[in-house]
Each structure stands twice: as C-alpha cells, then as structure tokens.
Length: 201
Image 1: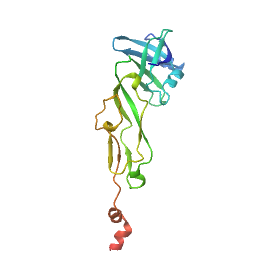
Image 2: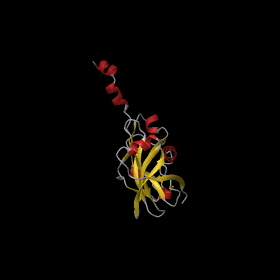
Image 3: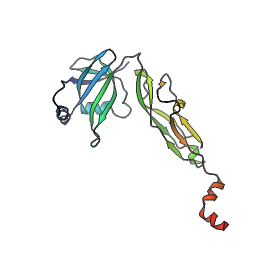
C-alpha cells in the first residue's frame, strides 16, 4: 500500500500547561497507538497536519516517521478542536496494517438536482452527512458521491443503499441519508390558497 510520509517527534508528558505552550509554537500534541503496539506520545507540525487533513485526504495512509525512523503505518483516527478558535488541539493516529479493517467515518455528498424537486414539487432533505464503515485501509473511500439527479419525489435513501464495495457498514442499515418529500397535489395547493378559500365564501 502507498503511504504518505509525515514527520513527527517524540514528546514527554510534561507539566500542566505544557501542551498549550507547544501549540503556540506550531506543534500539536498527538498519540500513536493500535493493536499490539505501545501507545507513543508524539508531536506533529501544525502545517504538515493541515496538509494531511485537506479535503479528500482525511483517511489517506500515512507513514509516521518518528524521530527519523519510519515504518509506522497509520491513519488519522480522530482529532479535537478548540470550541472557540477551531484550531486542532490533539490528534489520535491509529496503527494499521494492510489486511486489518479499521472503523472510519466517511462523508456522503449529494450531486445534482433531483427530478423530484425540479419537476414534481418535492423537497430534498439530507439527514446524514457521514456514515461509519469497517474497511481495509487501502480501500477507504474519500467520500461517497451520490448522483440524485434522476430520483423522484417520495423517496427515502438509506445507508444500505450506498455502493459500499468491500466495506462493511457499521452505521445502522436504515440510517436515513436523504429524503425527497412528495410534491403537493393541485387539490392540496388550492385548499391552501387564501384566494381559493375566499372564492368559496
């Protein structure tokens, strides 16, 4: 599997407030852990991390080069942000191997204007923007792109309807991805029309 190199450094757990000082100089505290491996406390450069987390790269396979030594396959498992500044405050890197599925969250993107909205008076509502999968690292999709342009009104689309390939769905199969409501009939529209009601009087 092809890996993207990411240089990191070991870090010692210090006094309270040390992590804040590190963040001010552009170093983000992180942890590297996984099955059969002792957890390692590390530091990653903020700019390098943002490149790794750029759109479409969230689950790319990484080789963490720790203090100059590579061979540490990983993905970004999760990260925390400051509620006010939205800056990244901590990252968890998960150790992976080519044959072991990992659980990940993958975005779902809807493309196109549905027939059910454009011609049939329905309303589109996306209920879920991420789903959880168990999948081998090399097969993690960057996203699920769903073409909805030919879908009519009165449809509910579930997670189980996605083209999952070799991935196993972790989210409940009936997780609603999106709905397109039924359009109102001419009779219903007239019933709600104030002018029509006034005419009846």
